[in-house]
Image (cartoon, rainbow, N blue to C red; front, side):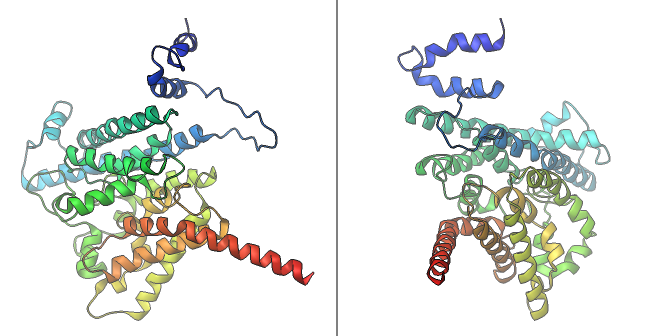
Amino acid sequence: MSLRNILDKMEPHFHKGGKYENWYALYEAADTIFYTPGHVTKAAAHVRDAVDLKRMMILVWACTFPAVFFGLYNVGFQANTAMADLGITEPSTWQGGLAALFTSFNPDSLWDNIMHGAMYWLPIYLTTFIVGGFWEVLFAMKRGHEVNEGFFVSSILFALILPPSIPLWQVALGISFGIVIGKEVFGGTGKNFLNPALTGRAFLFFAYPAQMSGDAIWTAVDGFSGATPLGLAAAGGVDAILAQNITWFDAFIGTIQGSVGEVSTFAIMIGGAVLLIAKVAAWRIVAGVFLGMTALSTLFNIIGSDSNAMFALPFYWHLVLGGFAFGMFFMATDPVSASMTNTGKWVFGALIGVMVVLIRVVNPAFPEGMMLAILFANLFAPLIDNFVVQANIKRRAMRNVSE
């Protein structure tokens, strides 16, 4: 008997009146993992497309893989390098103990680095998936609708924007806040106006700043402290970065300290290019973010400052530092919380690009700005679209009057 036949035989028990009707959301989620949903459009006048929500979300999920695998490598590379520098032969963390069962800790070994990094990130992702999945299923059961594939994307994005040393209980709290407060209280997927992954990270940043910022959280080795390149830039500009033997190419490739999935601009661009080619990500938003960042950073370069080294940071350094690239391709382009109109997408993207530079340069207490910039733009997205629509209405009305 095929899997399709088994699922079809079970299905009546999960429909209304069946023995397990309260668990229909779980059955539907399992069924649509393996097979395309059986629902088809029956009403007239619809645009028919082979790319449904399920395929779109799975594509976004798959496009994060380059950032995932390089992130695993870099977490292990940073930890193994720090252990070698400190003369540590055995890690003191439970994740390091697990890694010791499968590998050694040679920073020159690709396998050692990936396995060591995986022992830190996989528990973060599993915690995110299990806890967030619990809330998704709970709300789906209470509302009587299906579990949406959007959670696959939210879960992996959230796990990729966290530091590798974060406690798992904080991961659970963060994804709970992001899913429940950032999405479900507004009606679920398609009705939220904030990016759920960034909402969860913002909660952790303000509730537990010691585990989300500083110099001691980016390398998974107890007792090791090292600033991210963006933190170095905030303290002393590009010269401070170069003084640590970190080149622009190092930052572009991603062999630097930072959140798991945000370090490699190169890997992020691979996945981002696929999203743009497939037209899943809005190229106007990506272009707007980049142009907004370039314009304001160049203006600050021209103005200059004797007391703030960030004024002199060029746009090409902003691009490869912090969460800019990851946010530009994967967070800002969230179709639910971003602007919907074509003109609005340009304005929305430019607002993010301007805000991230403004926060990084002008705010001395917060060298990173992408998270807050995107959430700020999310709040204004409906207003931006409203202005664009009203402007179009007025322009058409004036054209008809003139005719």
